Amino acid sequence: MQRRPQRGPMGGGPMGRGPMGRGAFPMMGGKAKDFKGTIRKLFAYMGKYKKVVIIAIIFAIASTTAVIFGPKILGMATTKLFEGLIDQIRGTGSIDFEYIGFIILLTIGLYVLSAIFRFVQGWIMAKVSTDTSYRLRQDISKKINKLPLKYFDKKTHGQVLAHVTNDVDVINQTLSQTLTQIITSIVTIVGVLIMMLSISWFLTLIALLIIPISLILMRTIMKRSIKYFIKQQQYLGHVNGHVEEMFSGHVVMKAFNGEEKSIKKFSEYNNILYKSAWKASFFSGLLMPLMFFIGNIGYVGIAILGSWLVIINSISIGDIQAFIQYIRTFTQPLTQIANISNTIQQTIAAAERVFKFLEEEEEIEETMNPIKIEDKNTYQVEFKNVQFGYNPNKIVIHNFSALAESGKKIAIVGPTGAGKTTIVKLLMRFYDILDGSILVDGKEIRNFTRKDLRTLYAMVLQDTWLFNGTIMENIRYGNSDASDKEVIEAAKAAHVDDFVHSLPNSYNMIINEQITNISQGQMQLITIARAVLADPKILILDEATSSVDTRTEILIQKAMDKLMVNRTSFIIAHRLSTIHNADLILVMNGGNIVEQGTHDELMAKNGFYADVYNSQFVSIKR
Image (tube, rainbow, N blue to C red; front, side):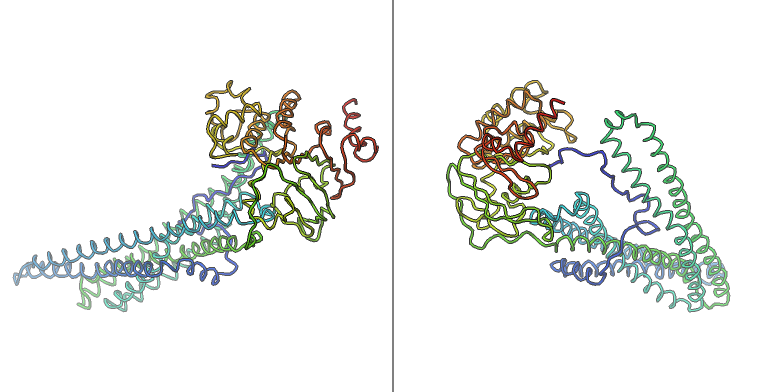
């Protein structure tokens, strides 16, 4: 449901999987660093399904075994029919249709039984795989909420999303299909080889000569084609990324007359993709005809040698029929195992990434005996000798101390990178401080649960965040229990009601995924209405009016002034003209408070604050 507020024009597109998939060639992807360890983790994760999986494997073996016996038994009917025809021609007997009918019914019964076993096995593994995928996604979702923000500072949204979608999907497909395919392929190879040897060791030896020739041919073609598949995947990603960039940033692209450049770049990517895809498809299409050609040569050889053995009464004609069927069956699992080995590598690599994510260090545990927050109208906040760095070796907040008295308006100002927003993140416990303490009503915030602590706050950020839903739903996000009337009252206080009736469907208008059907200023007003509805004890405004016009800013300022009455408020501002009436202004630079006081007091000092304040008006005059 949730959506990022805006998508920048440089968002790269996902790498497509291409036409290869799980066909004759391996999927592209990294290999697992700890193959055996990851398999152990995956099997341990699936421990609750151990008995069910064993039952599925037994059904798979039974299904394959039934299929293996089919040609041999059917060959008996062919032999009986052939012998009956000979006897009928000689006048010494007739065709035993009763025996042949019994063999045919037995063969049909075997194949029906095999199909039933295969259906049951497929149903069981589908249940196991989807249930495992469900649990993995649930665990990943819970893990995301337990990870500290510093983890997401190092990872892109796409990397985290890939664990929930691509990696879990790969595991799901492998568990539902590949696991039993391995068993059935091995059973088929062993079973068919035994049946072939039982018919004729000589013909089996001839048939086995085809295998190394086929494997050498397959390896040669795959070696030549793999580079084209890699290039195809690479440039499919480039094409997707370029299209996404041009679509999300089409306004900027048109504004700077970038159409011709964009088309030229797309053509370059598309031409390379075309050439690599053509060659990859050619080689993948070449393999099977060549394999069939070699296989057919083998069939011809077996047919000629088998005919000779029949003539000398060394083998029956039904056994020749069965043997040829076994040869065709024998080559399929070999190709499957070659493909499965690559699929397993891809799956274990995906599982390794998922388990690595699930094992990431979580936020510092909540206190074992949390303090309950008292229900009061206003709260005092105090910073005592706070030190913090996103990297412990690089401190950005140095010995920060300040007191925000109950119901007072505290402004935090300073140049970019001074640490203003960082202070707010520490107050919300998005990050934990390295040294010092932050107190709410004299109690260390680490003694509260994060959930309880954050019920005190409402935030309005410079970067607006709305999701794909109605305006009413977006405002109600501040208080899920609020009635429609309360939502509208909050909207009026934030001046959302002033413009919402001019929109289609008013409060029920759905904000689209790209958030292009309302303006940036209207987005900001909606987030302010959300904060009004939350009715917080402590209000945090991070450049809340930066995206609106001057007239709207004045209206919002009045609404904010009304909202901040009897509330402890923190205001981060670049435009110093908006904080004249703050009870305390903290001037930060380089992670330290360099000055503090009211606006008049700081201007009288004629120091850092006064220089910054005056420079803004000098810039305007220029």
